[in-house]
Image (cartoon, rainbow, N blue to C red):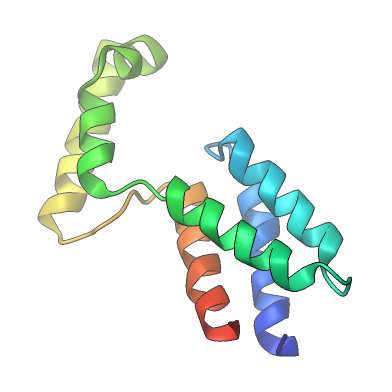
Length: 118
């Protein structure tokens, strides 16, 4: 991999792992990918990692559906869920295609970097 892109991808991967909103599957894929850097399975691990992240980036309509769910109300409380929904709708109104949580932002950046490398 190109060293500069690899360095950025590692930085974003560490951001992803540290994000409170990261799902278990993405975190595991990130940790596995970091272990495979420089090894014989790096290319395959990179493909698997990027595939996992593409599945985990939440489209804006999915974010809105989640914000409207009973689960969101249980997690954030009634007022928190309302604020979350308002935020999601404002994102959509601004033209944002995806969730803007730290995990989704890092995952999107990693996928973009990964596409340049492959």
